[in-house]
Image 1: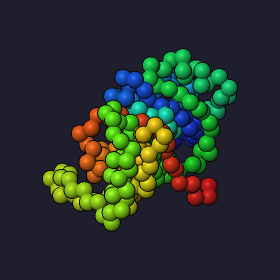
Image 2: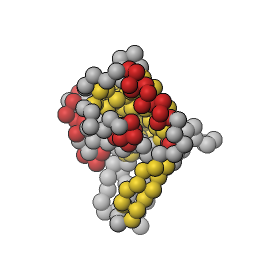
Image 3: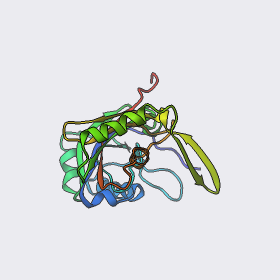
Image 4: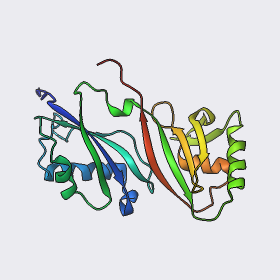
Length: 221
């Protein structure tokens, strides 16, 4: 029997992915974070058992090829630490493209971040010229639809999802970028390519940047 070591401190790290790191999978990002945290000599809390791993969790999977400024990492520590210089310590041992923006303590009783994520905001930048009028007409037509049915085969089974209630809003900013506010998490997931397909723009060259993650407030701790 293994004795569970209590969590003494939890850290919430806000970070981004840029450059070539946007092509790194979420599993590999977690492994990169393990190395970074070890090199910074943080007193990581490890899982119990024969295959022990640091108690760290990403809030939401980021699709490959997308840059970001709002990813969240939950880190459990076996000892409390002073956070004064931690951000610089982590930056000094981080690879290019792993951009660390903030570190803050959270209550050790705080729920797992994955259970709180409800929505996200993607900025879609078109590499070919698309007129504001054309894009606006496509957006208005999509938002006016009552249903948007997506069919796919998962593990040999047909899966049907209505994406319309999961697309909260689509707007166009002053630069002509499309801002897609959509659901992620347990309620359902909408990817940028889902939106572009329904707009009839899936073959148009584009880049995507995730600029916001939304978390529901936890129940009283």
